[in-house]
Image 1 (cartoon, rainbow, N blue to C red):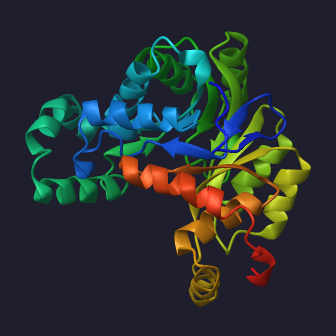
Image 2 (image 1 turned 120 degrees about the vertical axis):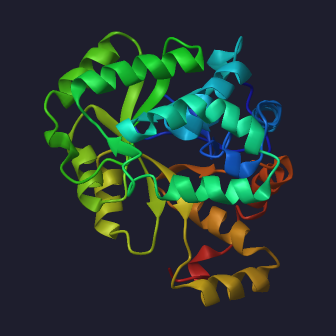
Image 3 (image 1 turned 90 degrees about the horizontal axis):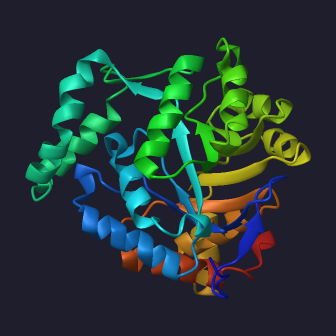
Length: 309
């Protein structure tokens, strides 16, 4: 993909991947709760690409695999123009077997109804507690999951594979790193990383040479020591959430003082951090996507040192 003057690009950590500083997150791309059709999903990806976004983030669990399938259709014939990241490590439990098989029909039937969207969102949020989905980082499952993701994406490799929501102690899973090495030697994955919220898991990624990237939130409670460790280890950081919790008044006042929105401040602040390579925007709306791109342009030169956070 040719570089767009409206979007900045950065090398992700110590990889050879040059990504747009805004990436397209697709967790809701084909979800019932968004009401977005497959055609609209394809249009959203095309709009992102037209505006210079070359970084697409998904997971095998998103939309029961439909997110990957839509992305595969959208990038067909121009795979080398995109950096594609996906995640594995969740599997549907025994209780969810029928639901997964029936979901394509349910999506079409329920999409027009707002009440159904709220119901679907509630089911997604409670999937862990109800054992509809469970985590599995076993070697056998990871190898199979990668093959399934490649099939849905219609490609023979992904640029980044994350271990999805890796908990503390994930590295103790038997055969985990041997499986990752096997997958990489087969040419199926260029770089591995983890998506995680726990500092212990993030620090583990800094000590293993196979894990070259981390995806996490930019939360005020995140240890600065953790980010220092990540930066010192040369790991690339992709931010999936930007928070202002605890600094709402300061951020709001700063935004008002400089004639910008709070969202512009948060996106710009995240991208001012030296350890951040890209920030994911999880919108399903083309106008919001354009607004986010404009936000980054407007927020490039704001005096963030005034914020004191």
